[in-house]
Length: 67
Image (tube, rainbow, N blue to C red; front, side):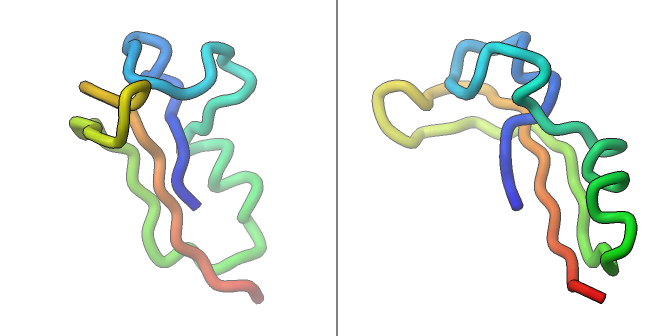
C-alpha cells in the first residue's frame, strides 16, 4: 500500500486535502495489526508524476503479509 501521509497537508503536490483521507504510521499498524508487517515507511519524496503531482510530498508505504 502506498498513499499520502498526514504531512501532505503542508504540500500542494497532490493528494486529498482532508486529514481523514490521509495515512499515518500508527493507523497503518492498527489496520494491519493481524498481518506480518515486512516494511512500513513514512518519508518525503519529490514527485514528478504529471501536471498535478509535482514537488515535495509526504508518503506512507506498507508491505505486509496476510496471516
